[in-house]
Length: 365
Image (cartoon, rainbow, N blue to C red; front, side, top):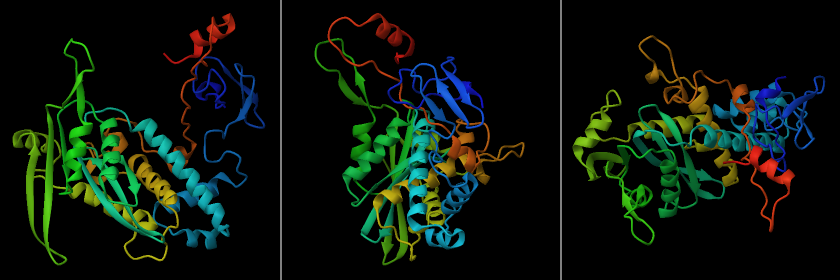
């Protein structure tokens, strides 16, 4: 037990989410509990993980989560391990929420994306059709996230584009999508910066100068594809070609990488199979499963196309510089996500000296 590697999970503690400041000590080695010297509370080593307040063996929970993330139906797990259906669903919901928190902590940060592809997946559920929209950074195969809605409309695409914008630096960027018209308008609204003119009033928002939007529209005769139209709807073809060449083998506008990722998700998440008896009941369970599979894809799955010249295999997170090794499922489930830093409460009048000292030491800058 190393108290320098953990932080206080108490949301009322001024030192919450901060480590390495001497505020955490060991309360009991036998019970594996820590002690926060600021709020004077104790907490277990499992706090902040999906194992918190669960009596089931950690190895069994890890095995079940691993099998679910590789396409095993929930019914098979219930009969194999003798578990109650609600127990497995509770574990899956907790693992999905934890994976989403890890994703937002590690992946959703501005970085030079280069080329991004986005697409939607049509999913059958017991309550009707649900649409799952996802995005991928092509050069590193990094899954940027996804959103779910009961309708394939502008609101769904806007939420996905906002997630992409949160991951993007103001740099040359190529966005490749299908012919769905909502993408272009959502991209133009999201990828804008404020231009300060020195006068009065709010600064004007101007679009990114090096933003390129490409579309790949497929023509079908019945269920057979008979043609493909590729067009650049914003930006220059030269910029699009320059950004595409950063990915080996990519020479024309295409959505092959995101479509391959869609196939991976359908193979590794049982409810996404085109023909299955394991349809989900609730959209929330599908949302958690999406983030669980996506986070394991980023951090725990070696990708053959990302192998370097020395022969070392890499995960998408390793290729993006987020981590330096391939995570195990156990490491992912044990990963602590810190709560947001403490903000002092609003009050009238002068603050007390004790409160001022807490603000100077622990408040977020």
